[in-house]
Image (tube, rainbow, N blue to C red; front, side, top):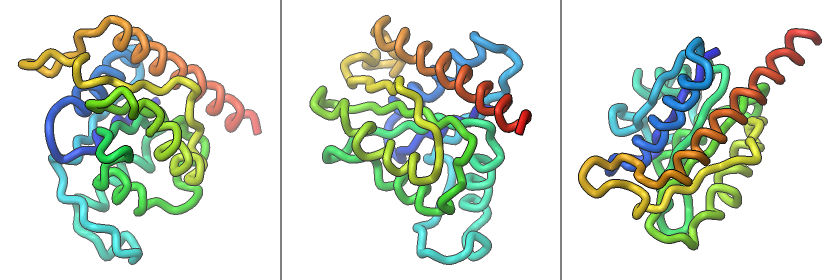
Length: 184
């Protein structure tokens, strides 16, 4: 199985670090899982204009293809103005309605206000559900204070445990989906 993590921000390292930690937790649970981090800072994903994907640059095409080819995906976003990042929403606009069918789609968010912990549930989950992704019951919000100021590593053990539980649930659900699809 291949798990792809998407860091949906163009600034800072916190979201990327949180996604990295989910991928690492998945590898600790099952070392046969292949992982890849897509850090949107490293790609020039074009602004979605509603045209066929072939009209866009190679970076846009490659990022979309990597997500479509993954068995399951974890999406990360910082919370800006009580919403997901624009760069992540733009990326999701490239996908057709059934793009995430039979894929578990985990969510991790970072932010400076504890009031934003429901944003992933209320903003990102409906989009992933529309794309037919299965969103686990576990999602993780990481407050900026939970990161080390210098290294951006997550220092809060409670958050690290929640990240581990997210990885566990995603693996369990994806294996269950794979078995069901194989048997049908």
